[in-house]
Length: 88
Ligand SMILES: [Zn+2]
Image: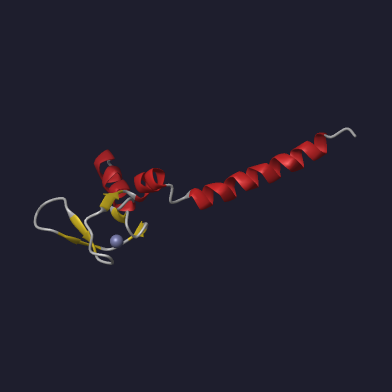
């Protein structure tokens, strides 16, 4: 696979998604004219941000819940580790 193809695949893997700041969720949008302005299909505002799922998640902390679960798991693992090292 060429580098170009690999990049294409990566782009395909990370499609652009839309996040409505008013609805506080990922929404479908209507594109207005030929410009990069998108209207939320749900509430109709233009208060819509767009980007890759990765960038939007980072920006709007959409994965906060997942991150919390991850931290919880690390904490549990640490607790187990501490126990085995515990000399009391
Ligand atoms: Zn909306």
